[in-house]
Length: 172
Image (cartoon, rainbow, N blue to C red; front, side, top):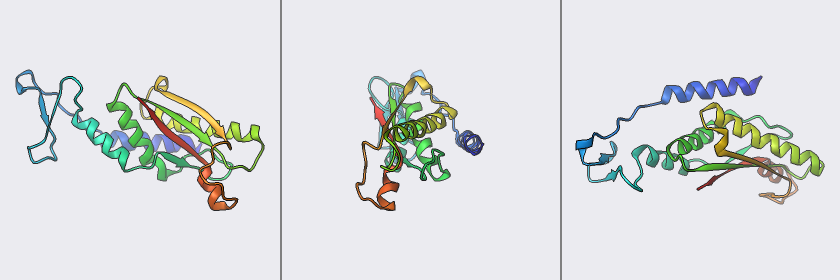
């Protein structure tokens, strides 16, 4: 139930932040100027160039960690990770050729089978959050590493908490 509420809040937050950007006209010379620049920087619209929205999405990606951490034995995304979900969603929206692989991970407590299943649920929770904000499931791949890919090998709560995560990896 709380996941549905969380997803609804994410949709409303993103819908409230949406902005429209006009395409350049045919007689504008094919150049779009970034509104935040002094006018000396511009980005070509044709060919391999990147739009201002894509550049902004790339900047958002630099500002977030590409992992979402979970509480012990849980797969509910905390509110504090909505910024990460939003940044990846915006990047995927502005880079239609890109995909994302979500790798669910667990700490070493629990059986191998249980941790593989929990890792998959964590990956699928992040996938669902991306789908709620408009990313097609065709562009999302989920896998579970279970306990096999620890980020921290310490046998303490600090070590365990670093391993309870879903890693978002862009595929180009």
